[in-house]
Image (cartoon, rainbow, N blue to C red; front, side, top):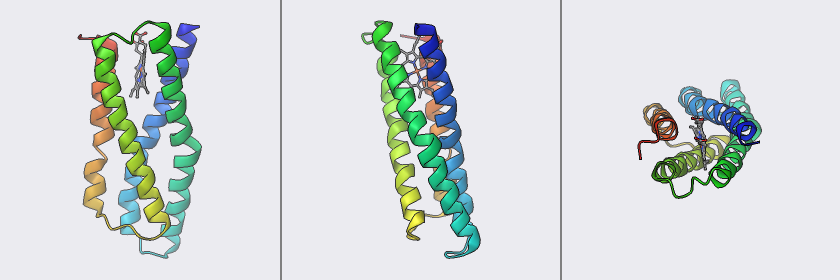
Length: 140
Ligand code: HEM
C-alpha cells in the first residue's frame, strides 16, 4: 500500500509542478498581449483551465498522499520532513499567489510587469530542488 501511495504522490507532484512551472510562463506572455485582444482572452481561458483542472487538484492529491506517507511511515519526528514541510508550505503559498494572479488577469487588472513574472518563474524550481534533495538524501 505504502509504495502505491508513493507512486500516486509522485504522479500528483509531476502534474502540480508542470502547472507551477507553466503558469508564470503564461503570465509573461499574457503581459505582452493587449488588454481586450483575442490573444489576451485566450490566455485567460488557458490560465483558468490549467489552474482549476490540473494545478489545484494535483496540489490536493500531493498533500493527501504525502501526509498519508508521513503518517504510515512514522516520519513525523524526522528532521528532513520538517525541512520539507517548510519548503512545501512555501510552494503552496506561491500557488496561492499564482491563483490570485490568474484572477487579476481574468479581471483585466494585472499591474505587474513581465519582468516580475520572469523572476517569480524561478521560485517553484528552487523550492522543488530543495524538497527533492531533502526527501531523497534525508540529510538530517
Ligand atoms: C504536500 C506535502 C508533502 C508531504 C507531507 C510529503 C511527504 C512525503 C513522505 C513522507 C514521503 C515518503 C518518504 C520515504 O518513503 O522515504 C515522500 C516521498 C516523496 N516526496 Fe513528498 N511530501 C509532500 C510534498 C512533496 C512535494 C511538493 C515534492 C516535490 C516537489 C515531493 C517529492 C517527493 C519525492 C520525490 C518522494 C519519493 C522519495 C523516495 O522514494 O526516495 N513531496 N513525501
